[in-house]
Length: 629
Image: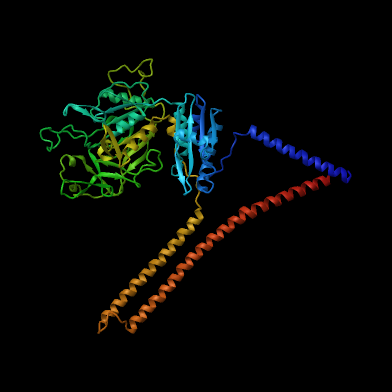
């Protein structure tokens, strides 16, 4: 082969390889577009099984509009990184929806039609800087009947629940009807006629909120069946329920129904047992509630005669005009350390106030898994509920108070496969039949899901909201998140089983763990040196005081020679220690810089160098094979 023919051959070979490369890229984009490998540590881009089920079961097409201000956010890398995370997950949703989700990414520039579109959807425009620019970072969705749902702004602090929020929006558009909730309450939660005052009684604010979001259907005090369209039972202070009602609840749970249950060892809003002619007299009936037969069968331990007292969470109560406030050990404010940040229900709550709450535990053989939502501090102990029958002074709770060091669960999510509390069915009833409702279930058809709260007082207005009248309207101003706790629980439980199964994930942001470790080590060394310096100062001050007291002239202004030497010694020691502090900080900076240089060398120099050497080696071997031929 001549040199000219060899050059022509090589040129055609390169051209064919280039065309083959382009063909492979185009084929891979079309044939393997849904194939992805998630190599992230926490599987950030791998959707859960619940999300996949929701996407596979979509009945009608859904349009999603992801609004992000690309231009306005150019100088905010943290927001842009999170926006990429959201967009990529939305693309995964669309790719796994069998073409039922149509995604459109929109950059709402100022004074554009896209900005008007974002405004019409009600998305939040967040101002940045002083130039008057706004950032849109939200999602809107519509279905085939023009129902709309939005996430007004993607807050970075809710990143762990990003998949849940997106799946919830898609599910709400696919099932736009309001969930039906069956309410059984022995407390005056809803608007009703008060026979004592002969006037209409206002509903509690939490009941008003629930009625705005759900179809709330009130159940009779003693019911024997639950309608098929009821998706969720809301039981508030269940007392003296008949066996037929307990059986109906049991079978509802066995069929896969979910429950939000509020019980209470001492419900202040329950006025039963109070003599209207002598309100200060002790109650004749303790205002407690329980689902004893069901709890026992399901392995739930709850004592309606015990109330939690907590020294750390105690709230101050006013004893009357002219009297100082007193910290009530059983009026509790659950804050940052007591709220479960890993559960969607309580992740964004700040404080939940409760009064005389009880607590839950699981029996050793319970089939349930309990996830605490509200827990006491470790400075708590159970006290008997009868102490609250007549307690003019809450400070009496301190008598005999001795914290056990245990944290008690006041609210919890429970899941698991359950056996019926009525193994053989309801006595005296024909449990056979052709219909699903007539057929007795000895165990749950799927994992049961319920949320239990051992307090009902947190539902009352006075513990979380101030209500004022204004021009015939009620204005509610919340000072605690009790209402959010209830609405979040109802919202979560009324969703599909797949939606409930989606859990929070680790955040997308990955800290430099090695750098943080170096910083912690340096801070520990700095703190040790500072403590050494403070100790030297105390010793020197003590020595100066002793020397001063031993002087015969007691001159407080002038220092004698021995005092001057002691003071100079301390000053020299102070300089030495401060020099060591600077060296520790310098060493830390040097270690961080060295780590950064190593990473830059590996990422920028070493990896490309290895790839280049591998390419050169491959070309050399290919050339050798051609010569051998």
